[in-house]
Image (tube, rainbow, N blue to C red; front, side):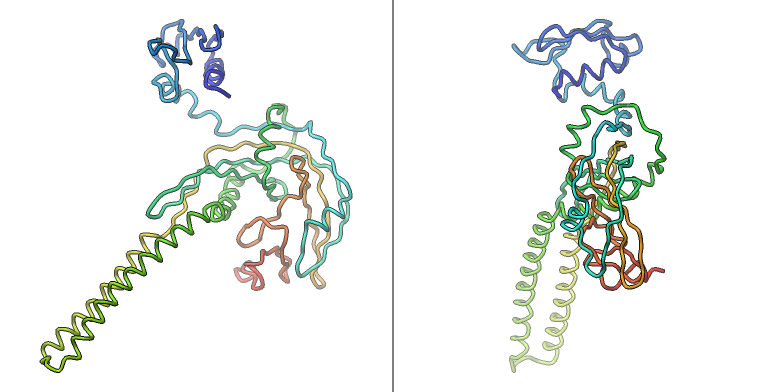
Amino acid sequence: MDLQSLITKILEKQGCLVEEKNDSNIEVIFPENLQKTLSVDEIETLTFQDGNGNQQNLIYYGSDFIDSLEPLVSSKGLFAAVSLSHLKPTFKNPEKILKNHLIVQNGVFRFVDHEIKQFSYMLINFRVSAIADTKAERILPIIINEQTDTIPLGIEERLRDKLEDASDDLPDLKVPDILESLKKGKVIAGKLALVEYQDFLKSLNRRLNRDLKRLQEYYSTIAREIEKALKKKSYREEDVKRELSRLEATKIEYYKKITDARGKYTLEILIEPINALRIFMPAVVFRLNLQRRKKKMTLEIPLNPISNRLEHLVCSNCHQPILNFYLCDELHLLCPSCHPDCPVCKKK
């Protein structure tokens, strides 16, 4: 959406009458309550292309008019709900799909049946900041199936196209409290953020190792000089004590510098929700039985209608999305890192 279309939509939402005059101008009639807020007259012509550099009311990113719109839209778009109930989930051979994409390392599963059900998905955009000696920020979208707690990875781009046909006619479906979904999304965002910032972490470790190496070389040189001086036979007892004291001070200073360097490169990740969108859509759900030794459980895994792929389950301990997992004796789903000692069982 270009700037002119965006401003037109915002103004129309605020009760303005907007008429497009040509490709670069719109004429706007402002309601009385907005005239003072935006410092405009009742009728204004807004221009979106600077042809000669002298137009009045030239609108561009960062212009005063754009800034004046912020109070009108800052509370909008924080949360909304739409429906994609028109989607037609399709699939072939569910047993083959499960066999090719679901791996239970120390147990077995058996396909039971399938059905098409209505689900609500929470799409949450998080601002993820990685802070150390430098700072990096990015927007990380997380999508959660609110009924099954599964994660449909990699559907953001396709979903954006589907939302153009979304409806406001929401189905009657019981959904969890939005704060509960935000809490779950934040945990998953924290796990995926470590993957997103792998390059940042590698750069951080390179700089840390470089500084530690320099410190080691510098203080090792000083220590060697002191030890060399101590070997001189001409040294008196007070000279030896002075050099030993200097050597001890060098060690203390070395360890302090190491601690400072590690503190400088300590990574802090801040995760802040920006906005959320609840999306209702139908999906095929596969029902199967999981078994480890004599214990069994029933599990539901949706086949996402956007990607036509299995949605990822979540590790019971670290909340990492998984389709390749282990089962503990209590049938908790565990990623390879959390197996074999089940932290969930230990907490109990």
